[in-house]
Amino acid sequence: MSANSPAFAGSVPEHYHRRLVPLIFDGYARDLARRVRVDANMAILETACGTGAVTRALRRRVDSSVRIIATDLSREMGDYAKAVDDPPLENTSFREVDATELPYADRKFAAVVSQFGVMFFPDKPKAYAEAFRVLQPGGLFAFSTWDSFEVNPLTAVARDAAAPLLPDDVPPFMSIPFSYFDLNLIRRDLSAAGFGEIRLCVLPGLARAAHAREAAEAFVFGSPLGAQLDQAGQQAAGIDALEQAISQRFGAGPLEAPMQAIVVEAFKPT
Ligand SMILES: C[S@@+](CC[C@H](N)C(=O)[O-])C[C@H]1O[C@@H](n2cnc3c(N)ncnc32)[C@H](O)[C@@H]1O
Image 1: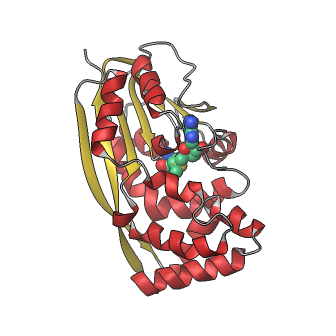
Image 2 (image 1 turned 45 degrees about the vertical axis):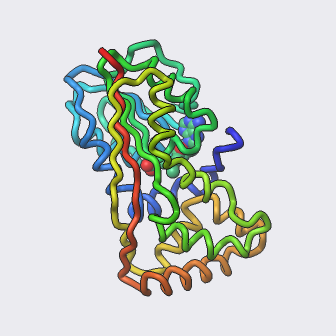
């Protein structure tokens, strides 16, 4: 696992899947899947698939003859994705793969898809070059990244509530996902990899939770934050602090908080 990549391990995959995915990822997963149109008998590669939120949304949309290979650097995220994939999704497999070193032949896939993973890739141009290499001419690389903390106030509030309880202030896994939102930089990185047409879309969304504690627990248990608070002897205090801060800003619940992502569609020239 790279220094950039936090530990999506232990009990994180299960809590991530049950708590964090419904809170902030599911709506964007459905949107990303809608952007992917491939012909019958083609293949799709998903990188940083996590517990399979996009994989399942894709499977519902594309023809059953389309092969989906869903990959993630974390074996434990992949194992959990497989465990909840029961009965198994048809024509779909989950594998442990680093998005910056794809073990696939050139021009194998009609589309490469990645939701909220690229921010963790230590070498984004390399990951983009790999996606470009495995795409067929005309193929689509569709991915998303979070916009800044300023337009993702729920996560910013969680970060600010947790930081005083942790020895290293804001841990990297909370800042990294909100550090790659410069549209010009994203465009430059993709152009350098060879992509031709590049569409960037700023996509607002709404995080919804039944109550502030539900959102607080989603952040703590569904991410490496829980383990870090635990190590500092602050897990219970952390949940209380997040609940209070979220409740103060967005109400005790049911609550809605704005969020914002950047969705990218980049095409390999024909
Ligand atoms: C925020 S999660 C997103 C997961 C999933 N796409 C979703 O929308 O729920 C980020 C994922 O990126 C994965 N990841 C981090 N670095 C990676 C890399 N170099 N290659 C592949 N996956 C990586 C992590 O293991 C984690 O599962």
